[in-house]
Image: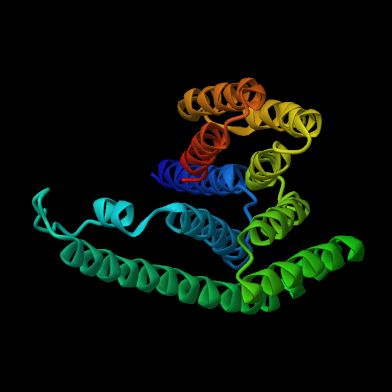
Length: 273
């Protein structure tokens, strides 16, 4: 009887040890599966600059519209006037639409002002993390310089300079994202930069625009190694969109390049989700 009792005790102890070992192994497996991603403060900085660039592109499109063209793009439905309206009525409608256009531009500029302020605050929150990661001080100074130049361009309401300096700030952030081994936003930032800059320089330097888009090849390769299979289709669409923009460089059509650039940016957003 005593021997049986001892045997039962031994079996129970072995079971407990076995369960403990399995739990320990599971913990080890969970740790291995944890991915090293960028902190929220860094992600917020990138998102805010993205929004600034997107809003700036929208401002450029609004500026190019006549008041009546702007009205047709508004969500609000207005009663259409008959063709035989007299000149005074048409002038009055045009003036009202001009005011609506100015109001929309003012709203967008105010939003950009708020975003640039928040970007500086988020950078202040994140910078200490970058220092702990032993980032090259030159990379920090480079980002600060580009952010300050972008802030000045916002103050001057200079859309071209905002797109230029803002995209350069995005490129600077790539080095920070690459501090985190499982992060894909570094390569995506490099592709964003290439798309914006190729669009900006295409009017005067097609060869340089081509080189910028060609430079995205390495980023596409690295992304293919990191992305889940379910996102490879979107990556393929991104690669095709880059090739399409390259082919559009010789068309001497700014609107076409803008469309091709925005398709690249849309595919990048899908990969970031």
